[in-house]
Length: 310
Image 1 (cartoon, rainbow, N blue to C red):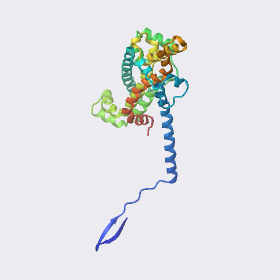
Image 2: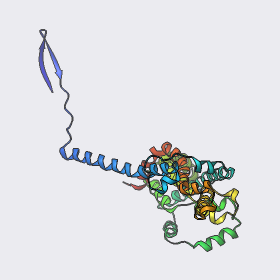
Image 3: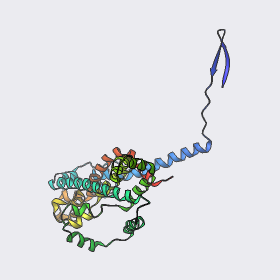
C-alpha cells in the first residue's frame, strides 16, 4: 500500500508494510492453557528426581521422619563414601560401560539390517519374518528354557550372556522399518543405476539419511542396557563381572538386612540403609542425563520420522 507525502517541496513515495495476522482469542487461550499444562508436566517430572537427590544427601533421621522434600536435611555424604570407596564399585561401573557400549553396537547393527530387509515389499517371505518378530513381543520360551539355552551355548559368565539375548527390541525394529519405508524408492533406484549393490546402497545412501532414527535407537538401547540388572544377575556368578546395577542391588539388600538386625549393625550400615536407594538412582541416572543432551535434538524427529508416513 502506498501514499503520497510532500516533504520539503518534493513528493516521496512511502511504502507501508502490511500488518501481521493477529492471533485469534481462541488461539491465545490455547497458548496459555498449553503453557500451563507443559509447565505442570515439567514440575511433575522434575519433582521426584529432585526429591531423590535431596534424600541421597540427607541424614537418616530426617528421612525416617519424612521431613525431606526438595532440600537436603542434615547434609551428609556417608552413603556416597561407602559406595565410592569400594574398588569393586568402580570395576562394576566399568563393566556397565563396556556392556552398554558393546550391546548397543550389536543391537543397532542387527536392528538396522533386519529393519532394512523388512522394509522391502518385494522380499519373499516378508510377512513371515514380520510375524516371527511380532510373535516374540507376546510370547517367550520362559525363564528356565532361556537359562538352559544360554548355559548350553557356553555363554554363562561371559559378556555375551548379557549383550546377546536382548539384542533386538521388536518395538525399535518396527519403528526403524517404518522409517526405511518412508524413504523415496527413487534414491535406491538411482544408486542401483550408479552400480551400487544392496550393501553399498545401505551404507552410502540409506544410513547417512538415517542419522535421526539411529540416534534415537542408540538412546533407547543404551538406556535399556544401562538400567538392566536381571540378565546379569541370572547369568553371571563372579562379582568382578557384575554391572553396577547388580552391585548396587546387592548393596541395598545387604544394608536393608543390616538395618533389620537392629543394634548388631554398625552405624554406617544403618545410615546407608536409609539413603542407599536414593544414592543408587542418582549414580545410575547421571551418565544417561549427561549423554541425553547431545542426542536430544535427534530424539523427537527420529521417532516421528519412523512413525508417520505420507
